[in-house]
Length: 291
Length: 337
Image (cartoon, rainbow over all chains, first blue to last red; front, side, top):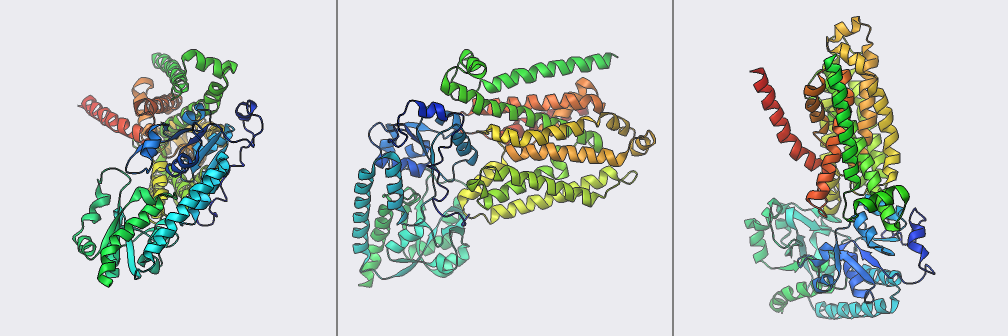
């Protein structure tokens, strides 16, 4: 898992000649030209593509992009066709570029490549620095480099203003608490969001990396600034959310904490700065107390 | 001879059903192609997008549905005959759980994302190792009277161990996405399989079928008991190797490409025993066709019932299979009373 360098496996060059390559390439002179029919089948690439694509260039996004709990761009997604990411469905849209995430079904991606489609695969972002990198990569793929640079500049400005807001804050230990007792350790986008709000990831100090389970007992002993998330699904249901109502957790939350919308930070998109701002907003009372 | 005639009629009817369901599988999908469009795309190669949909997406899926179903039905009948146990099913001797463990390790280690065929290859390796372990545990030459029992016990032991290790991999999964991917894979599906999967799995399945197909007479003799069969000249050690090897090769390959699909191998022989009789040699081909028909029907239903939701095949076979099996048990009990 960790051996694969992010994006090294990304295969936009892998338009390997397959049974359908003649079909896909025949009526398009010069394969270096910008793709005209882009289909995205992953929530994260959906949003990057919607941010950067020229009008009409993006044909379809995944159904996740239309769900308010998960997507930051529901309105834009509503204008496009929603897909469920199956190979037959994608193929019939006759895309000249498919954007996918590394957690899309491996069999689907292999079949799309076999059909001669150009498939670009994106690893999940692990830091804020990955956001400009992802934006530029999508910009290159779509032939929208200038748009990408503009969006990167906007992102960097938002990041700088968040950093300015955070500059005076005292460093506090903090921890994420996700359903089923998971937390974000080192090397995650969520941990980087936390760092941008001058919070220290207590889970990372425990040696956790990636998204990992953190026992409630250990969490309570850390006495962190508790960050909970509003889930991707629109309602909270099921045993996974039991610990979210645990009295110990409520006591901890009463000491200070924040709720971040999961859709802001599940993907490496410019919307991630809104997660940083949400943490800073929640810290404002703490800041006032410190003064 | 009336039973033989009835057997032939049943086989012919099953053959027709399998052919019809194979065609239905080819005609089912989100593309909304008409019958004429589908056929001309499949046979004549007209209409470029439709051609690839039919030949590269739906055809491998239908072929795998047929082959995996036949594998499960045939293996179930062979094991029920060999073990003389009506509850025997292809997963009993550890093959499915070994294959599942291999596949889960491939997902866990991230190999399946880097190299798509890593998953089925690791699953095949897992199935092979599991069956070697079962044979080693059960001992080489079956002792009189104890052959079936030791094999069942060894199978249960290896299945439990592989199941536990699979749970461990889930438990230690690097992140919730990987855990979800593992869980979904284990539910069993034929969605978006390509000819690469067919090329990988079909040779193993054909070898397995060939081994199992030779079992008929030996299993018929075995219905009299192991001692009686041995006295009739059946070589029990060879029979066991063929049964276990055939199940391992075919079910291992089936699980490697489709995940764990339950109930088909258990139910198909029971479904057909009233029609062709309990003689294993008659039941083997009928059960293979029956398994293929059931799996193709389930795969069509999965696509029709919840288009876009990717309803998992293994879930559907279990949901339909379990109540059906209960009905079968109830009817059997009434028959005895």
